Image 1 (cartoon, rainbow, N blue to C red):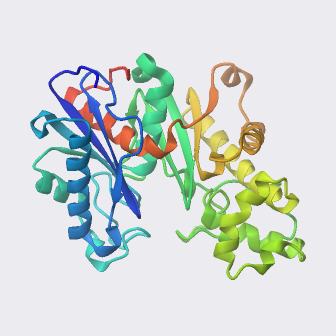
Image 2: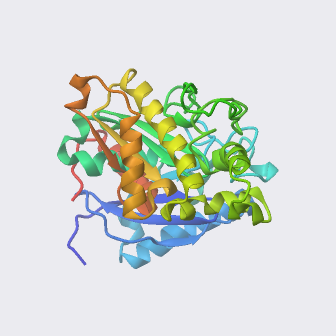
Length: 348
C-alpha cells in the first residue's frame, strides 16, 4: 500500500440497490482502484439505509487499512430530487419511495450517525465533479464544464472554477428538465414526449431509459410492426434491450439513439450559450457500450452541438471516466475541497 499522509476523506455513493465507497488521501490519491460495494437497502427506509452507509464506511476503511481517526470528512451523493443540503423531496423520489423518506434530512442524519462532517451532492453533480477534476488535473480550479449523465433519468452537473454550481434549491445542473427544441428531432407524426416530472419536451423525456420506455420505443415499434421487441412481456423490459439491438446495427434501435443524441446535442448547445464551458462530458449507460456504438453516438452528439467557431477551437467533448466509481470519487473530492476550503488540488 502506498505511503500516505495522516488524514483522508471518504466518498459514499448511495444508489437504489448498492453503495459504492472510496478513500481519498490529503495528497489527492485514491486508495482503492475498483468498486467497493454493499447493499444500500434504501427501499427499507432511512434507518436501514443509514446502517448500510455506516457499514460501507467501515468496510472501505478496513480494506484500505485506514484508521477511522484519520477520516476528516465524508462525501455523500444520492439520486434526486433533493435540496442542496441533502433533504429528500417532500414528494419522495424513485429510489426513496417509503413514506419516511419524504422531507428526510439525509445529510444531517448521516452526519449524526457517523459523528463526522458530511458534504452532500446529488449523484449527477458528484460524477460531474470527478470528470472535471480528472480531465483538467491541476487546472481544475481554473476551468468550467457541463456534464450529462444518461441513465434511468438524465442527470447532470455544472462545474465552475472547480466547484459544483448547486443553486438556491439545489436544482442547478438539472439538464434533464431543461426544455429543448423538438423541431427536426421528432418525426412529423411523433407526439411531444412527456417526462415523469410532469414537463413535456424536456431533455429527460428523450435522453433517458424512461424516455425510451415512455415515449420513443412505443412510437418506433409502431413504425416497425414486425420487430422482435414486440414479443417482450412489457415495454419496460423491451426498453432495456434497445441498446443491445443498437450494438448490432438494428435500424429501429439506431433511430432511437439518434434522437437521444440530438437531444443531448441541443442541451449542450443551450449550455454553450449560457455558461460557455471549456468541456462537455457525457456519461451513463448510453456510452457504456461497444466502441463502435459509443464512437458513433459521440459523433452524433457532437454533430448536434452547435458551437461558434471561437468556442469549437477551445472546447472538448469527452466521456465521464471510471463511471461506476465516478459518484463516490466525486463525493470524496467534494469532501476534500471542503476540508481544505478551496478546490485547488491535483488528483494523483
